[in-house]
Amino acid sequence: MTTIDIGTVDDLPALVDIHNHTAATSNSNFNTRSVSVAERRDWFDQHSATGPHRLLVARSSSALLGYACTSAYRDHEAFRETVEVSIALHESCRGQGIGTALYGHCSSASPRNRFTSPWPGSPFPTMLRSPSTASSGSRTWGCSASTQ
Image (cartoon, rainbow, N blue to C red):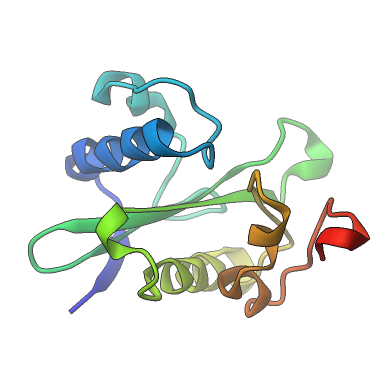
C-alpha cells in the first residue's frame, strides 16, 4: 500500500538518491551532477508542513517511492502565491499513478486548497500536458501550437 506524508529529514538520503539518479539518467531536473545530502539540506529546509512550500513523499511499507514539492517560483512579491511543482519518482515506480497521486496531494494541501499559479517544470513540452497536470486543471504554458 502506498501512503503520502509530509517529508522528514530522515527521508533526505532517499530523496537525494532519487534526485541523483534522475540527474544522471535524464535532463528532467536540469542538474548535471550528483549532490550530497549536506548540499541538499538547504533545499529541504525551504519546505514546511504548512504554507505554500511543501514536500510530500510517497512510501510503501519498505521504501520511499518518490516525492513532490511546491517551491517558490521567483523571489518577487507578485509571485508570492505562485509555486513551481516538482515531482520525482524512483525509477521502479514510474507509470503506476504515484506521480499523479503526489500532484493531487500537493494541490489539495496548498493554501485555500488550490494552486493560484502552478508551474510544472519540464524540459519536454508534451510533459506539461501529462495526466497529472491536465487532470488537475492546470493549463499548458510556453508551448508552441505544434507541440500542444
